[in-house]
Image (cartoon, rainbow over all chains, first blue to last red):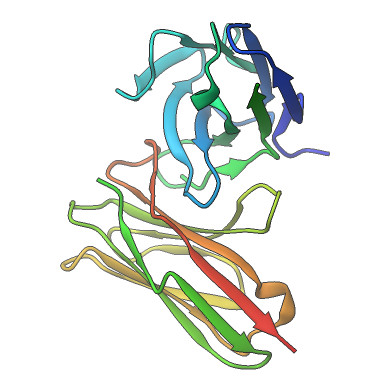
Length: 115
Length: 110
């Protein structure tokens, strides 16, 4: 499978715990995006990387959220001290940015439930 | 500010046509269309770029009015597999993050 891969697919955690999600993009893609989606809503931008550089973070992203892409390949998204409001689907997408081809392809997502 | 999609929901019979609209108050570089089925990832359908370039699905067409910052997705001769929620995502620069609309739920019945 050469698509975007996310792990785990589902995560249930207790409020206050830390969680980490992983995203493996399509291999030649240099841009990687994280989005959050709640039921009945469109995906909401969180942050994105070009190679290992984090280029933009949403103002909605609190200090409890951090993302890395250390070697410009896979990325991790960590949420510290989870709250019930963090329950959502966390989607990763990747694209090959070369000024002409900017379509992004999404992974299956990680569904987080904070209890 | 997120783009506005209309209609919010539509029900079709197999073989009927539908149009989904996406409108932004901001100047756009690109409009991206995705379809998402329940519990699954959004699937890329179409990208429309400022200047007229398009790329996407063979059986789905779309338009992008750069002056009005509006895009429309045209679904012709709908099939059962077209059911799902359609999202438009707007980009203000090439390769940047997308801002998604609230979605249009499409149901195709036999």
